[in-house]
Image (cartoon, rainbow, N blue to C red; front, side):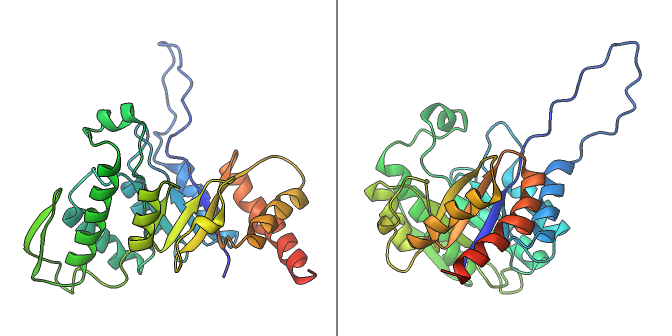
Amino acid sequence: MTRFHITVPTRAPERVELPEFVTDLRPPDRGTGHRLVGRAAELAGLDGALVPFDPGGLESLVVAAGLLRDSRRIEVIAEFHPGIATPVYAAKLSASSQRYAGGRLGWRLVVDLDPAVARAQGDFLTGAARYARAAEFLTVARGVWDGSGFGFDGEYFQVLDGGLPASRAPRPFPRVYLSGTSDEALELSANHADVHVLDPGDDPALVPDGVAAAVRLPVRAGPDEQVAAEIRTHLDRGVTEFFLEPAAPLDDAYRIGQRVLPLLEQEVRHG
């Protein structure tokens, strides 16, 4: 089954500064931008919404929780760095979201950060160590999710007799999205990913067996037929999921759902 996810904004538009003699009666921003995009994705029949990791923007797990609350059907995928918290805390936080949202939360781990960004986040790991830590992070998170009495003694994380009570960890574990084309990234996906996310120019043959192939797809201005044809090209190469990155998320969510996807369906049906 082909699935389409929209990328939502994590920053509010900058407000125009008013002169000091003007009383500012404008209501404060309460995240209306990403909430509107999430609702548009659901109304347009898309499958999910990605909240990207943005060091200078809103926290993705918090935004994802808000989108889950405001929606009923779509999957909401929070992209975050495995150094933000312990895997036990991340599992507990996500289990709470799964309980209230009917199991619709997904995880997209960003492992390979720009060095300056990583250090600003307090993370000084480099090279293959980043992927080793991500593997331990996912192992521990799944381990505590599956019940009590879990133990783990790794290089980056240690757990003794840990676990979430069944009442706090309803199934399913968040769907895991990973990316990258290095040997370490592909090995991590082979062992832990449900979906491997490619860049537009990457070869889907790189994706490990048993892992679904997805692609990041910038949505450019142009005829709807052109966008549908680009999606069809990736489908023919074995891609089954798309992370759409529109310039105008709100307008393009409706455009894709109401115009592009029907064109794509018609094109696939007629070969």
